[in-house]
Length: 345
Image 1 (spheres, rainbow, N blue to C red):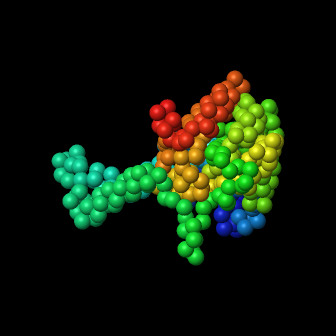
Image 2: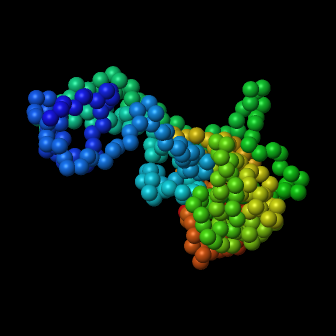
């Protein structure tokens, strides 16, 4: 039987239909070649490695948390639970609601716990670094307590030394009115990148040079709620979402033109990785300011100015906004809203 010349390929291609014992026979250098098969194996059309066709690149997946407000819970949900869902959260992407200092402190404290063999690890809780971290945790807690005690960080001071409140001076037709601060996502509307058949409107949003549709549904009663509140309050929508999404949504939502001011993520106070809506930075009297939000973390500095609402997604029978109208109408007449809201909590 004539010898078969070895292949000149750098990486010879094995026939796809070889059974295991035939493949092993070919790999053994000193073994006799197997009997010729009755019919040659089907030819395998293989191109050199350098000529392999490139797979078509898919456009990058845009994380929702970079555009809209992140998830409300203080611990992150799994992607299957949050994918395509917009929420009215104040939690920064990747945050668990706890400071990184706290995590480092706990990790080093745990490293001092005896292992299974009864011996302690190299790191001791009495090390200087551990004590420094413990002091940092105490400092962070003191800072948070101080912010809550002081009612926020106060009006920012500009480079020229003058106060720079988030809102402009109150308009003449709003003088004498209280300020009602409204959250957007899951308080007034629910939005999603996933198609919603019953969407009230679809808002195109540009993200990294690609356009994406955002499907928006309105909370039941929101139109009448905004109309009634616009007659007795100065209305501010304050959202932790980005303006490129929230602005066009508000353009369609505010059909009665009652929203006087819009504040977005960049106006939030970043406290321990969370987006907090610091009412002390607005430039309005705190006793005349009310915030309605589905996320308690957003008003952590001003709990006695808050009217909590539940997170709304799709329930067509929800009536919270409608139920709030008479209460807020009465609240507009009190001297200091904190005296009422503190007792109502």
